[in-house]
Each structure stands twice: as structure tokens, then as C-alpha cells.
Image 1 (cartoon, helix red, strand yellow):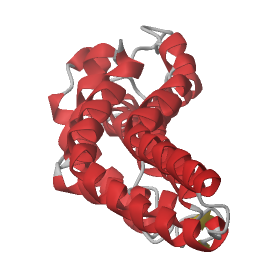
Image 2 (cartoon, rainbow, N blue to C red):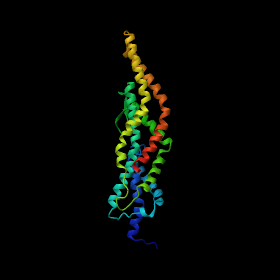
Image 3 (cartoon, helix red, strand yellow):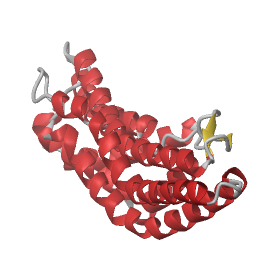
Image 4 (spheres, one colour):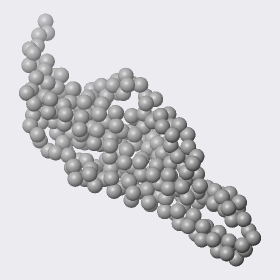
Length: 254
């Protein structure tokens, strides 16, 4: 007959509960994975599966029982770590969407938008387009597997301990907001520069030929040139996004 004590049961539950909490927090905040189209039960199921795979890889020192007096603090730490990793990745997606908003503004498409099924809000069309492109690139480069690997590595950089233990790099997370503007500017700069040159050319044309209706000609020309410039800039988006993704995964852990 198999018998076990309550302490053994608490230790066994703690072995899987802390990785589960960290993974669930990641699923609730990470891009693509947090989408409202994914049922909550499916997110919980994937978190349980990931915890079952990660827990045997953890050293015995990280098997803290759930009956520990530090259990609420440990739970809060795991949720914070998982949410921080997901939040740092969402900053990259926010940067691309911001770049799309600026491009759409210069192209004259700032008024065009549609209801996003993920957020339930109306979003600009170009920003949403770049957000979808970012999601496809994320899946194409196995970004979801990179997230799982980052969470697994986080147990070595930020282990489960009964005390406070190593802390997140809060300063890096606080300054990560600047990456939204840096990455967004890198993505949007070629198209914005093209639009600036086009506007200067239209301004000179309006001075040379006053009888020309610049407002009637300018909008379709701006839209056409903007589409071409955006199409030519898309091949650069993949390597830039992959590099920013790799940096964002490491930011909370160092």
C-alpha cells in the first residue's frame, strides 16, 4: 500500500505549482498567447502541461512546499516574473504598431480603422497590419518556443526560494518603454523619409504650377507612394523584429 504524509504532498504540489503559476502569468500577458480568441481553459491546460515538463528539470533546492509560510510571497514572485517576461515581449509588438500608426498618419490613412477582435477596440489600419505581420513573424521564427525556453531559463536566473532570492531587473523593465520609440522609429523611418520628400516635391510643384490642384492630386499620389515604400520596407522587418525579440526575452532576467 502506498502511503505519504501531508508534508510530502505539500512538497510534491509545490514542485509543480510554482512553474504553473509562472507559466500561467506568461500566457495571460504574452502576445499572441494572451489573445481573447484562445479560451481560458486552453491557456490553463497548456500551463499545466508546461509545468509538468519544466518541474523535473528544476533542482531539488527549488522544490518549496505549498505549506511554507512564504507560499503567498513565492506565488506573487512567480506571477510577477511570468508577467514581466510577457510584458517585455509585448513592448516589441507595441513598437511595431506605433510605427504603423505613424506611417498611416503620413499616408493619410489615420482615419481608416477596424474593430480588432483581440482588444475589441477600433485600431488604425496600418498599425493593425504591422501587428498582424509581427504575429506571423513571431510564429514563423518559433517565438512561442523561445518564450517557453526563456521561462525555463528564468528558473536558473530567478530560482524559486523560500525567501526573497534574486530580484527582477526592474530598472531594465522601467527603461524598456524607450524601446517602443526606438524600434518604432527604425521601422517607420524609411517610409517617413519617403513621405517627407514627397511632400516637399508636392510643395515645390504647387509653387511652380499654382493652377494645379495639389489637394486633388496629392492624396492618391501620397497613398500610392506610401504603399510602395511600405512594401519595400517589409523585408527589413523580420530581422529587426527577431533581434528586438531576443533582447526583450533577456531583459527581465539580467
